Image (cartoon, rainbow, N blue to C red; front, side, top):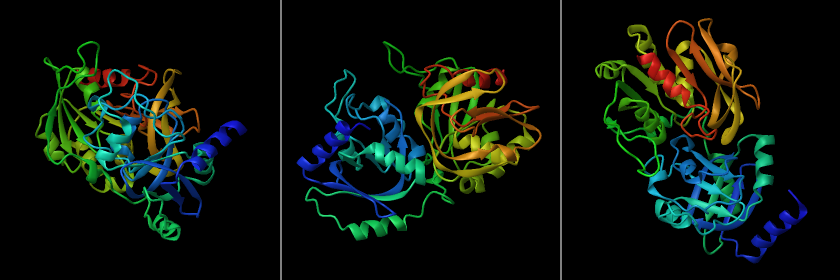
Length: 391
């Protein structure tokens, strides 16, 4: 960061009443200007490097238990619209930005970001040196934090430090059960397209059961656009529940938390499906990790995870490099993959596993989000591969 930029951020904070603060478990304190809802939040702190999509990020169920630091400074400039929600309500616990959210300037906007956050009960803090904060996260790992927005500027720092240290963290935590659907439902809405917007799939060719560990709507839209009749089942669905639908394929969705914890009930289901049927299986993000665990691999907690829309991933089968969107704090340990499983994709940032497939069956998964279109269409072929396998 340049000296001028640092001075500008400091000047904004010094000339404006401090109405929010962010406290790390190690005692570090960041003062700023609060926006959105008033109140407190305790969570793991991560950073996201995407230049767009703040609304989709805040409503992505995979961010449960986390506060997001946005490295891109211009947040709020496109406003918000219900069409861009990935789930009904924001799931991320709060947001940290460099500059206070700007007024919206986009024809699709129906509401300002600050009002949307306030109405949805999510705390935000601006005027923060996000570059310094991001460096701290990269060097020390994702910290546990407490954040508070108080219009009167009254902060009990010692108590906030204690709350940050008391946060249990995401290891060993099953959050999928908190964000999954309460009951099954059908999905037929396809991807957004000009000028119609979202349109329904009226001639599906393949019956797909999607297990919802925290599914993003755009994933379901991609399945529908690829010609699938999608039935969404809760995370607790059994193999019997799934096979009763007589599906042509099984999809395992993204989601939050520790995959080993969710795997306590998800892994036995997946194993039973693999043992008793030959239907194609496709997993994304947490679904990728669930499949890996069911096949005998292990998962590990990452230092600060991957969060952004600019992550290069190499397809080891073709040599192609895809620009992908990622959001995960755990990863599959590629060294533990069994002999009948092939590693198909790796991150070019750190070499971590980003994909796998079985050698002898149409069962595959990826760690990244092919529906998020940062490439913009680099990874859509995965949905087409799933459909081809069902044929």
